[in-house]
Structures are given as structure tokens and as C-alpha cells.
Length: 88
Picture 1: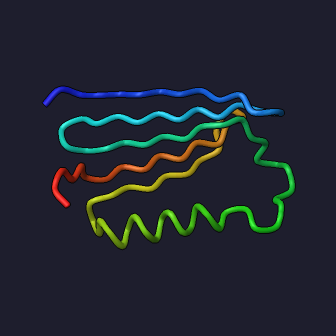
Picture 2: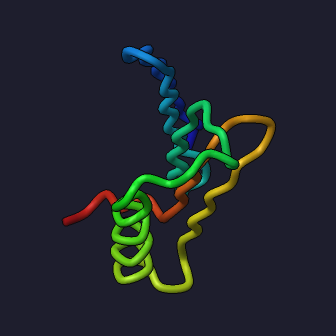
């Protein structure tokens, strides 16, 4: 199968949000990237959604998924990878 990719860039008030999805060799990669300051104080409640996504991903695809979250060069990037399922 051929690879497929989509990238969308939003510029909400005060920032930018990049969403990218790729399918290659039966694996879906979903990437979310936005500007961030890792030294800024965290707001209460931040990170709960990321924990929920990680738990659900691992619950559905144990040993077949990847969840990465990193701060690098002033950006926060989250990468999710999991198998493409074509049947319900």
C-alpha cells in the first residue's frame, strides 16, 4: 500500500497548532506539534488528557503502539503510532 499523509496548521489566537497524520505500511502516525515553553509554570489540570490518551492507546493496542511527548527547541510534540484497522 502507498503511504498517505495529511497536515493541517491552525493559528488560534496566541499560538499555532500543527496536526499531521500519516499511514505507512499499516501503521498510523498522528503528530500534534505546538509552540511551548517548558520552563513556564504548569496550569492545574494540564496533562490529564495526555494521560487518558496514553492509557486508552495502550489498552487498545498493547505492545503495538507508541506514545511520545517531548519538548524540543521551543515546541511541544506528541507522536502516537498504532496499527491501522480496516475492519470493525
